[in-house]
Image: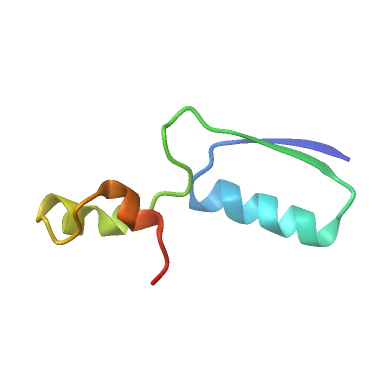
Length: 62
């Protein structure tokens, strides 16, 4: 099975993950036009308020 997923946000990456679990042999390609994949937009206020020094910190798990 070949699959192309447009968008590497939360839903796109969740879909890719689920497809991989269900079909380990699948050829899965995720296409994203933005700079970051699966960025947690709910963390954006922390960046804007200066509580995190870099927007890249929003991608890290403590």
